[in-house]
Image (tube, rainbow, N blue to C red; front, side, top):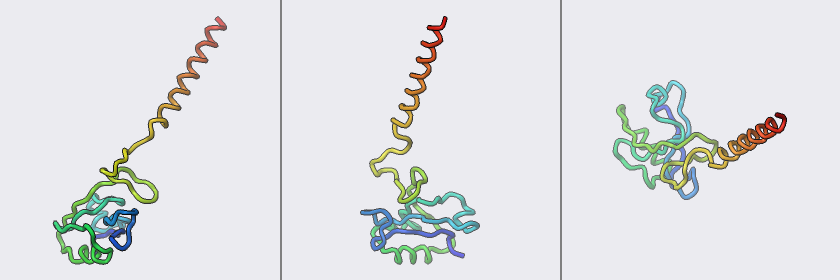
Length: 125
């Protein structure tokens, strides 16, 4: 039944522009990777059984997985967060999480509203 996941990428089928790495595109329910629980969709696979996947065509990477044997060791780079489309990885020069403005703007609006209510309440006293 295989390893239980699909891959995308390679020198001939780049998933992310200017990046020929191999990525996990789908983990099959009840497959080996799903049952193991450590591999996640979007993970970048760096090596299979110690063999580097760098600069391989897609079909050559698929062949490496098919010939990996029963005990398979994967070296991966975890994605930062799930999202639609290409994934970001640690080391891409981008920070994960929310933009600072997404936290500050609502917080400042809430604080301004509280001050306004307090001033209105004090005027009525």
